[in-house]
Amino acid sequence: MVRQYRGSVIVRMAAPFLGVLVFIGVFGMVWLRSEIISTEYAIGELERRMEEAIMEKQELEAMLSSAMSIREVGQRGLGLNFPDRQKVFYVMRDDGALGQTASLKDGRVGRLAER
Image (cartoon, rainbow, N blue to C red; front, side):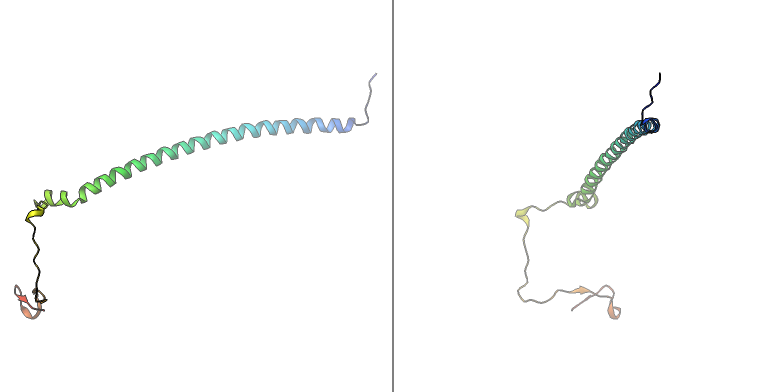
């Protein structure tokens, strides 16, 4: 004897719906997990590239500072040294007149012209 329930139509329709819903849920969880893992790999790669860029920046700044150091340029390129403080003296003019400047005006090449 087979008993039929009043809601058997609903049960027959709900079973496939629930099966499809479970399948979609499992598929969605697997897809979400794979997306999270690939995002973690991408973040790790970006962090590694950022660390390399920071290291390269620091190396370039060190090279620039050593190349642009006044002491380094003067000593290597021009053979200059910083003066001793005891040997430095200052010259001041009392009359307030301007100094002379070199001029190429009026054909005076190589002469000094007054301002």
